[in-house]
Amino acid sequence: MTDRTADVVIVGGAVMGSSAACHLAQRTNFSGQVVVLEADPSYQTCASARSAASIRQQFSSEINIEISLYGISFLRDIGTNLAVSGEQPVIDLKEGGYLFLATPDKLAILEENHALQTKLGADIGLFDQGGLSNRYPWLTVDDLSGGCHGLSGEGWFDGYALLQAFRKKARSLGVDYVGERAEKIERTGADWCIHLSSGDRLSAPILVNTAGASGGAEICKQVGLSVPIHSRKRCVFTFECRETLPDFPLLIDPTGTYVRPEGAGFICGSAPAEDDDTDSSDFDVDYNLFEEHIWPTLAHRVSAFEAIKPGAAWAGHYDMNLFDHNAFVGPVPGIDGFYLALGFSGHGLQQAPAVGRGLSEIIISGGYETLDLSPLSIERLWSTTPLVERNVV
Ligand SMILES: Cc1cc2nc3c(=O)[nH]c(=O)nc-3n(C[C@H](O)[C@H](O)[C@H](O)COP(=O)(O)OP(=O)(O)OC[C@H]3O[C@@H](n4cnc5c(N)ncnc54)[C@H](O)[C@@H]3O)c2cc1C
Image (tube, rainbow, N blue to C red):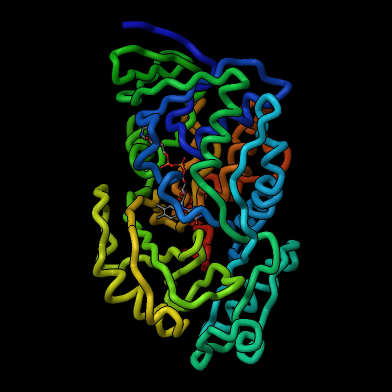
């Protein structure tokens, strides 16, 4: 058994843990040792590797919009932000925009969200039924009264490449990645003592929980914190379409079903019905969801999707925050040296740049220096003041 020490231990080395590690290591006022514990260095099953990897400004809460505005600027400059020895990462960012569609009963909400998004600087166009029909001739608009399209600053990218770019940059700056699971966590004086799967122990005064759907809630439990974070399965289906549909955006149907281009084809998905959306950790694909709900919905919205060729599919897990579908980020009052970035509820990949940066600020300087992430503090759980986000996909 080996004992070692570090200044910061990050549990979970996928996109969030690696962004935090990278931002910590980039700071000029910090030269401490950062260790990232990652139970599965192949990253086969983590959300970061199974994501639809898209970024949008079309949220309803100010903090989520601000986070994504920073996110897109970071992704656009990823080559310079995360270059290692002159080698620039490529994440294949496509700014095709989200197209949120609204039925008459939801138009007022769409307009309200649009007003907030544009006030904060997001480049979102609002279109009435006629405008939608002119812009997207392939779209069935009979039951729609409007839609919002991200004209720039929204789109999709290679999420796995983003995770690897953060990881590579962090390692180049001296961050140590250890391919082991944090099995047990104890408090020993001013330090956290983390028992690893090998039997080794690692101690540090600062512990950051970025263990996602598969481990985040359990880590919290071990330090005496109860969080309403649950692992919820989401399936992604690929298909090819006979017709060419140029400049197709990431379309969000009023039912919540989404579809976007991927290579020469498309990917799509939808949350299961509420009653079927139970805690889950398996990776079985729910093909019924595609056959019975997703495909009929898409074929109604875009008639070209009546004739498609279904392809591969996969399942991943959201770290779903059942309290308000937003992440808990930052320090946990009353638990010294314990930090969270958990509960992203399906929008964590795009939030990784801002959240990693914010964590590095608050850990080292004791406060947020750029974007104030305190609206994401866990204190809102305790005061039962949810951060309501109406656009959860
Ligand atoms: C199908 C799907 C579609 C999505 N689409 C989008 C999207 O379009 N846009 C977007 O922004 N987000 C999307 N998301 C959400 C996004 O992928 C996640 O919010 C984000 O990847 C979370 O990153 P993370 O690093 O916090 O967690 P994860 O990627 O889950 O990583 C957690 C890591 O912690 C490790 N770990 C767990 N327990 C331990 C332990 N005890 N010790 C050591 N290591 C441990 C795991 O092995 C894992 O690698 C999607 C997610 C899914 C599943």
